[in-house]
Length: 415
Ligand code: SF4
Image 1 (cartoon, rainbow, N blue to C red):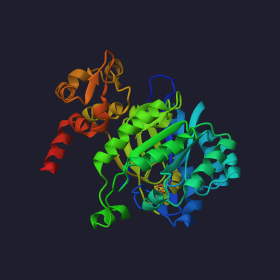
Image 2 (cartoon, rainbow, N blue to C red):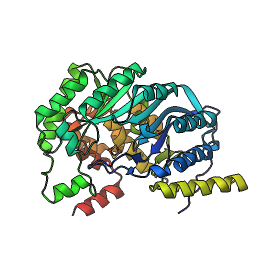
Image 3 (cartoon, rainbow, N blue to C red):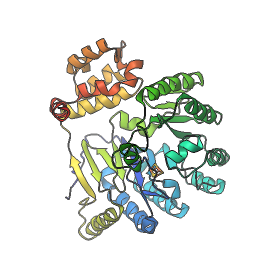
Image 4 (tube, helix red, strand yellow):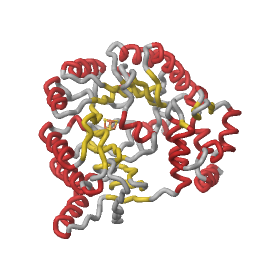
């Protein structure tokens, strides 16, 4: 399916903020729990993929001419596998093509396996100022369960190397609620990680995603299902432990030292514009949600065709975009409410009213009244936010904020 993105028109000359996500879908091995758009053994595609990423960036030039890029995020997959030459080429194209803010937050996702201090120095010299590392656990058996290819020692080595290379904004991803895990090994992982003072921590509960090797092992009874009560206990403990260590929880699963909240992810949670570039990358831009084709080889072909047509006919049809929708007002209001409530600060009444010209308390009067009673929500003078209980059970509230047609569908699916 081919989609054309309509041209933007602005009534002012102000530059609009936007985040850019670039997807690198290559990994050395595929972890057993992972359902991301990531592939092992596709290294042979890397040169063509890099060239297509660069072409896709250029295809967006005109549509982003009224925007200023506030964040750039290389995600994956394993972006740290990309050679310095390729990264340099991609980054140079971004800076030549878009208006990049002088204080841009520039993140690269990394795995602790391949990173040497020398490589990290070069990455830092390219202007990348935030490193986000998939640690997941500091327990060798848990890393084995997740089929991660690194050891706890490698994590420590890379953290130390990153500091020496000048990274002063480090995020570490951790996973709790692992199969057979009780509170103790999780505590040990968090305590050990805190000794290295990362500026940011993302702690997610393990979810068993259909289609992954881990899912089939649980299905066949080879492994037990994760225990949600233990996960809840670990979550509560984490909130307290990180609070004591002076981290600010600013989202359901994210904590940061003061002034180190992730600007890129805040764009998602505030339901603001971001553009996804690369195979399977999703965008919310100019009122539309759209996504590129997942398969890297097809992505390469389709971008190349779009680019050639543009060069020949000066007409851009983004053939790599394979899904495209314009959410209606009710959906946008609902998305903004659900995403915004993930933030600990919640939704500011005035901001919501300014954006939609409607009072959120009236728009969702029934759901808000219900969940003030269930104790999942709380109101302050200026905002609506999740309570401590709501942080654990947020999905029970979110389903009540879906537009009528979607909650009807969910109810039918649940029958
Ligand atoms: S390294 Fe990350 S993206 Fe790659 S397979 Fe593992 S979890 Fe998935």
